[in-house]
Amino acid sequence: MLKLNNISKKFGDFALTDINIHIPEGEYYVLLGRSGSGKTQLLEMIAGLNNPDSGEIWIDNKNVTKESIRQRKIGLMFQDFAIFPNMTVFGNIVYPLHCRKAGRREINHKAEQIAEELNISNLLDRFTQNLSSGELQRVALARTLITSPKLLLLDEPMASVDASLKDDIRKIFRKLNRKGLTMVHVTHDYREAVSLAKRVGVIHKGRIVQEGSPEEVFSKPANRFVARYAGIKNSFRVKFFNEHNTCKAKCDSNLVFNLSDGEYPEEGLLIIKNDSIKIHNNDPLKPNNYFLKGVVREILKSETGMEIMVDAGEIFYVNMANEDFKILQINELSEVWITFQPETFIVLKEKVSDI
Amino acid sequence: MLETINEKDVQESIWLTLWVSFAATFFFAIGAVPLAWLMARKQFPLKNVVQGIIDLPIVLPHTAAGIAILGFISRDGMLGKAADYVGLTFINKPAGIALAMAFVSLPFLINAARDGFAAVPERLEKAALTLGASHSRVFFTISLPLAWRSIITGFVMMFARGMSEFGAVVIVAYHPMTAPVLIFERFSSFGLKYARPASVFFILVALAVFIMLRLISVRKKEIRISPDAETQ
Image (cartoon, rainbow over all chains, first blue to last red; front, side):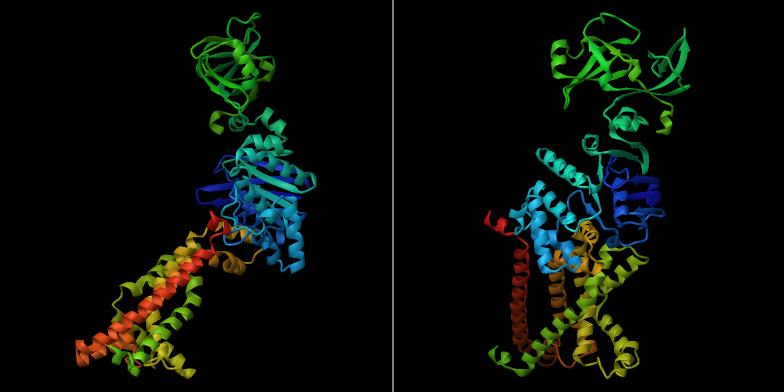
């Protein structure tokens, strides 16, 4: 459906470099990246608002790199919806039909149909200044969908919507995708990617640094940046060595981790998921080689429970359910033991300087 | 005063001033508004030089501007020759007065319209393009309606500046007399007593015209407010 082949483009000091993305028909693809990573520029390039310096854009097996915006049959919904303030909701929705010189009957019929589908029939005669963010988004979506685009591009669609409305919007997007619409959704929020994407591409400094299903990307992040995106805060620069037939990893702070058997590079990154660390308020009953003693430095509430910051020579972040936290009865400065499951360690060969 | 109002010369000069200034504003706006959009939206070589040229009439002595215009529109000048070829004369004609008025007042329209276009969020224009609009449709349906108030303000400013222009107009066309030239002529030939009634009459007419134009631009503003906002 959509193929980006070796796309590169310079924007002043910033550049999109060698972007290769292939999205089959009907796929929900989420492009994940921080603000300034180049995701919006890439989206605008697919829509035809910018042309690449090199590379090709293919849509439906047709090279559209040099084609005008109108010939691409793409719908793009902007982050702040870009609703025209000088028109009513109806005027906004039918704008693309006027551009295509559609007849009055077709215009009215399609407007009614799409308004009903998105539950905005009661808003058609209103001007847009006093609409809520959720209503504005539905208007923007209706305006984009009224010409039945083959590909829908969404630029941070949840960023300007109240938290309470996000679930409704997600439902609409899923429904559209189930109907066969190919969608490219740009976001900085990995939870959106997890909840919607069939495939995720992580973009960083104008390059796609990892691509795959959300499970693949977030369980095996390719670098520290992706790991941070997956909510993993424990990544340590280490040197690997073998001692008494045991594989070990030594941090810059001289903290040593025992590892399970396996092949390790000389140096790299050791990533430990927040969820695979357990906290005990006394000596673990069955001590093994994979525990450290530390002090609780900070306790924060998180969306899923609590996040505990433990200083055990290095700072470790541990996620914990509220119930477990209550049972544990720990406070800041409490002495605790943390245990690991070494089989969940993620080892990356790259050097920190490469990231 | 009433005697002055009834004078044919005074009535004609005021009418001439009003319609020529309006015609000059209207005619030059056709080119000036798209130029303002270009200045607001596009980057091109020597853009600063173009902006400097646009602003030049504001700082130029208007008699000097008149001399420069005269150089162009006299029979030896480039524009004069071309106009002569199609049977048009600028000197001592309303067309020459319009040119002189426009030359010194155009920056007010271009700069106001440019600021108006610059204030229109670019993403609205981008959105319209992605929805299938041509560049001209984007201009007429998005950029122009959203910058309309600034353009109207610029239009009124240009009209006002053109109407009050004396220096450039007196060089290009002493006759037919515009109101400022007539007032000057009465002052220099007959003194303050004779110039005063014509001045007061011209000021009153100008005031009436501006109140009317102001009301029109305020109505434009109200149109953009949604019915809901009015009821809240």
